[in-house]
Length: 611
Ligand code: BES
Ligand code: ZN
Image (cartoon, rainbow, N blue to C red; front, side, top):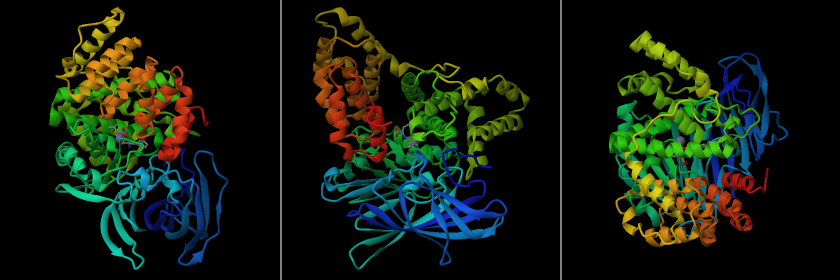
């Protein structure tokens, strides 16, 4: 029986097999309107109603075969939205199917959609729409069983004045008399509702591989095609490790700067932030990550958001396997070190006994967006990394990884399912010796314990060492009035990732005197750097020192970069920095419409402007 504390649907009585969307995109009204037809199947006997998740949706009609059905939009749950209760004309039994057609429109309060004015795009001429449904925002765009325990296929006809792309394979387009076009899509692989995705804008496509096109505004197409040339090699490496790629196409969509995440694994069409366009391919790990989701998350899906680590921990693990095969072990371990630091920061932010620092938190009554952090990613990765070493290395663990995908593809699972299969695979393939090893694992501490993981994995620190050394030198120089041991050459041999890690190390030591920050900036020319990771880390170093000279730069970056990984910590730190609180709030409020609704909601909470 699927369990999902963050869905209001009667998941124990019905499941959805397919959704067909017929929607018109209106940039004037900022709405999607039309219909969703859900093929619903009873999974119990004597089912008299279907309860769907909705959030800020206007329901116009509910019919089955042309007959109207009685329905009620229940009072809104603050976090989970309004249940739509539909009474069936007659009770149905296990295996029976009904096609429910719902006429509806999204509203201004839709949290999945961001409607951008032309001025908010790169080209400045055309409006733009994009959606972000993970974790529980699909319900604000489509009435559905918005739970990852439900997997469905979908098709869509999207009528729009500009090109539409979706997390599905395009199957045709028809020009309409009024100048709009209807774009058709089909997703044949069963997937959870949070992977429904749509973008509409002035989009151009450029082929970058045998199954990949990169889509973006024409102004950045060149840069995007250059940055992501390694896409096919990532996919092929994933296939070597796991199973053949199941989704047909793997396209990329480079979004406007307000996209709230680094990447989103929408099937057939990964969404990515334009902040990956560093011009040196140094940030494409994110693409390897989203490709890894093609198996971990999209084929094998968490049953509910309490087991989110099964999506993200596994994906990070595979991402680093791909990276290791393509760029060598040191590079992969360097990424693990960076991830470890992100986990430490998350644990510090929540506090080490906070329930959300557990690998498998309880989300009853909670908003999954509030529980989002690096912890499921990195604690999950560290558990798998530890298990691999503990059980005998890649020769034992890589066959297991593949078997995990073969066993669970097409299904939604929880941590108990995962663990049971791990045990049974190890016993069947390698015998009792591995079971004995598994029995030595402190499962309780790993899965339920809060704070840092119970085992401190050691990673190869070849690439990180130089970063720490340089940071230490700065630390030791803090009492010198005019340090002379530093030169612009210090960073010459560094990759841009090493520069980022150097700044990360500097942000861990006590704040440096402003004279030292002046010197660091004049030698290393950090303030003008455009690479978003470096720029972010440098600004964080400055904010920690209440270095007011940087404040205008922070306000500029945080109001033009909607990726939450950057804008949230920057605004939060500015808010807590000396004389920064007012500027932080002012910056956010002035640019509120720049942010995606999800980001705007989170920042408002961070700055004490909402609860
Ligand atoms: N699926 C996530 C993004 C996400 C998670 C959106 C939860 C909404 C709710 C995506 O795959 C992701 O993890 N993105 C990271 C990439 C990084 C770990 C390489 C990001 O956005 O930074
Ligand atoms: Zn991910």
